[in-house]
Length: 301
Image 1: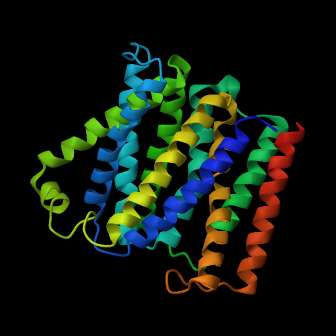
Image 2 (image 1 turned 45 degrees about the horizontal axis):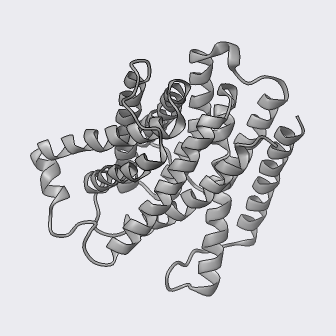
Image 3 (image 1 turned 90 degrees about the vertical axis):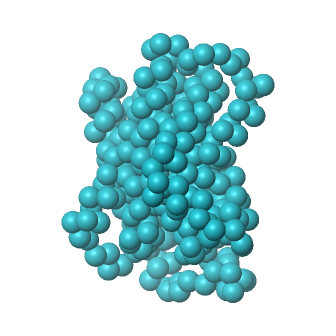
C-alpha cells in the first residue's frame, strides 16, 4: 500500500470529528462570515510550527501558488458555509465531496496531462468514487439551480486548493510551504473586517465565541487543523496522478462519521440522535466494501 494512504485515512478521522462539530455549531447562531473569519484567524497558529521547519521566505516560483491557494481556500470555506446556511448539511457536504474528486481529476489532466490516472489506478479511483458517493448521499436530495451553483462553486474552489497546494509542494519543502499558505490565509481573511456588514456580523454580541458553542467550535477547529495538516502532507507525498485518489478517499470520512453518529445515537442520544435504519446500514456496508476494494487495488498494484 502507498505510504500516503494511512496518512489521508487518519486525516479523514479528524475531518469527521470536525464535521460533527460544524454540524452542531451551525445549528445555532453562527453565520458564515463570522465562522470563516475565526477559522481564518486561527490559521495564524501555524507559526507554532516555525521552530520545526527550516523556515525562510518563499521562493518566486511558489509565491503565486501560495497566494492563490490561500484565496481559493477562504473563498471555498465561505461558499460552503453559505450553502450550509441555506441548505441541509446532509445535502451540501455529500455533493461537494462527490464532485470534488471529478474536478481534481479534470484539473490534474489540464495541468499535468502526461501524469493523469491510467489502468488499474483509474479503476481504483472509479470504485472509490462510487463507494464514497453512495456512503455520503442521503435520500430525497432536491436539487435547485441555486443549490447547484453554490455547491459546485465551493467544490471547484476546494479542488483548486488541492492543485495549487501541489504546485507549492513541488517548489517548497513541506513545512515551509504549509506554513506560508496558512499565513496568507490569515492575511486574506483580515480583509473581511474592511466591509461594514462583515464587521457587524463578526463582532456582534451573539457569535461563535459566546456560550456553549465556544468549546465545540475550538474542538472542531483543532480537529480540522490536524486534518488539514495531514491532508496537506498526503498531497505533498502522493504522486501528481494520485491527487484525485487522495481526495476520493475522503469518503472514509463518512465511514468514521457514520460510526461516531451510531455511537452517540446509541449511548448518548441527548447529545446526538439520528435515525439509523436497516437499509441505511446495508448501504453503508456496501459503500465500505467498495472503498476497501478500491484500497486493495491500490495496494496490490
